[in-house]
Amino acid sequence: MAIGIVGGGPEDYVPDLHAYQDVTCWIGADKGAVTLIQQGLKPDLALGDFDSVTREEMEKIRAHAREIKTFPPEKDETDLELAVIEAQERKGSSIYFFGVTGGRMDHSLANVQQLYRLEKQGIQGTIIDIGNQISLAFPGTIQIRKDKMYPYISFLPFTKSVSELTLQHFYYPLQNGYLEWGSTLCMSNQLLSEKGTFSFNEGILMVIKSRDVLIDE
Image (cartoon, rainbow, N blue to C red):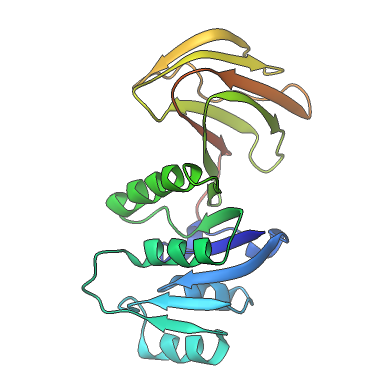
């Protein structure tokens, strides 16, 4: 069961949400509910303090959302974290995040760290915008598929270092490589076939699929 969470980041960074047919539940965090409605989707849940929406937008949310939960502006959790808690309670096995990049850097970095918290609980999290897909990988052998929309694949260490990284069926193969913070060794690679594998035995990897894009396309 995939759950889609849409945050209040710039709408220009949000791809066509209709492309994600495996999403069975849409949650709009604050202004993310407006983004869902503008794309013709009904939020199954709209939540947050709604301090980023206008009165007119709030009326649209009330008219279209199947459920609304309102929280005070002064709280320990961000609206996105509240949405994650809701997704966990709804037993989502994977969570797609939209509208969580392109705005404030502190929020963007905190959102990437949400992926770690989810992975530790056995939930696959993926951040998606019009130019990128970001996920985390833990030690082992992982299969990865070619994506025509996001043809470039980069591997960055999420932990201080990643050891014994091997890439198979990539344009730039690698055997037992070592990555540490700041390394650009595994940037902008591509698959040679429809699928490939990567493996490593220590650390956590950030896996980024990307494409070159003009933000106003």
